[in-house]
Length: 85
Image 1 (spheres, one colour):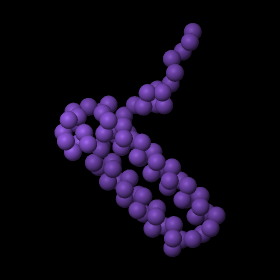
Image 2 (image 1 turned 135 degrees about the horizontal axis):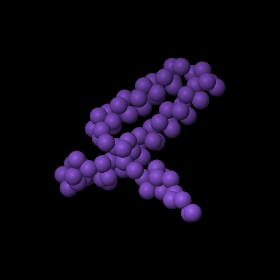
Image 3 (image 1 turned 120 degrees about the horizontal axis):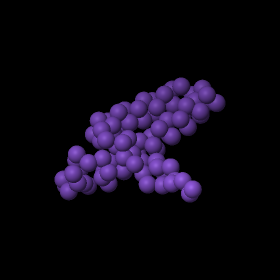
């Protein structure tokens, strides 16, 4: 909604829209990895390759629409915990 309604600063990396897009990209990547594993087991080319192509297209379009998404830093996930000493 931040992108559609223009209420987020598009020049900033740390926005809700970039965070949401980053999570979507992570989900797409994990889904693609899972489908590749399933392909290695089943060899169902006719069914799995179109799914991988669709996921690849969604990934490409997401990166084009949200070019800063992968730069978004997820607190607690992308930042190592501070040293205790």
